[in-house]
Length: 415
Image (cartoon, rainbow, N blue to C red; front, side, top):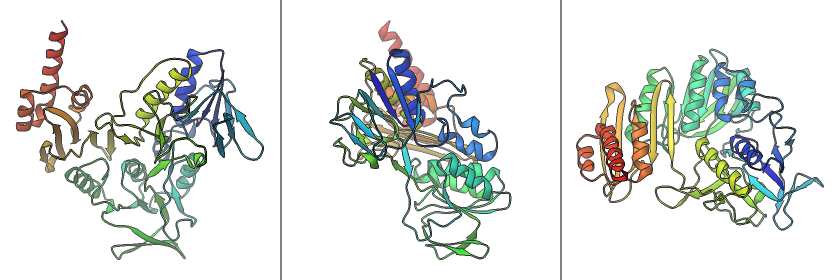
């Protein structure tokens, strides 16, 4: 049996290891398109800070870990009828089972000047090298985007002692993860650290100047900088599949076994459009823990197992210059649902719980970490809170008490 794994990020590596463990005699080919061993993009900010070297981003440290399974190539098209992947020209590779784990690619905003020298995304090791050359202490840097990835990059840039300006189209920082109150508290926190933040603002154009780049903003300001970083979001890396015949919407549609519309082709990670744990609707859940879970399920089934996914739970935990924020599940709530919110802005503390009937379905927190496990546990178990719902509506900080009470009740029932 020949297993072809397209994409050598965390999902691809975990899947390859899973298949190798379950089917040690099978052939495994792991394909990546970059001139580097498999690495974690989430480690790139630590590289920018200087805490690690490029080798520190590598997913596995042993040089012979992949046993010559690695192949450098870029997919051009997929022939599902003949189970063949075209790698350009006459170069193609056949497979018995295929896993598509090509991850995400940065969204390229349609801004005049986006291709100028000194404008970079922050997604690959090559990008990191370019940014390191320009982001010297005192350098003027403008970052487009203050989402999850943008805030991680922001932290790395701040440690370099650059003069940083952040521009975000949304009405708050991390708008796809945080409520309005929490997102604006993060903005205030960041501004107090000496970083300029413009929300409800777009970059309209970038032009070359004698001493750098001129960035025109929609609020009427023009800022001269040495470096522009584009962190305006990502999208599934599936362009090569457009004529493949696989069922695709925003991402590749997969079932609970991570199978695509072809029974011998699987997908995992950012490329998938899978079922949301809370809503039952299809979503793109581009976070590394989700990719790892899906890769393990896909590997088991490619090796002949019967693993199934329970649904993709939206989980975001972010450290922004020392301020920890998190959101879970349906953190923005549902129509007709109830919620409770508590905020202590002076201490940068905030919590909001979302309910559907007497079940906790989502939550947002800021400046508090002790409740994270209890929140996730109550959402994932879909436990009926009963009287505890009213107690939480009165005092959401009793979330740990509610979790422990429900866990004890379940243990007593089982006993």
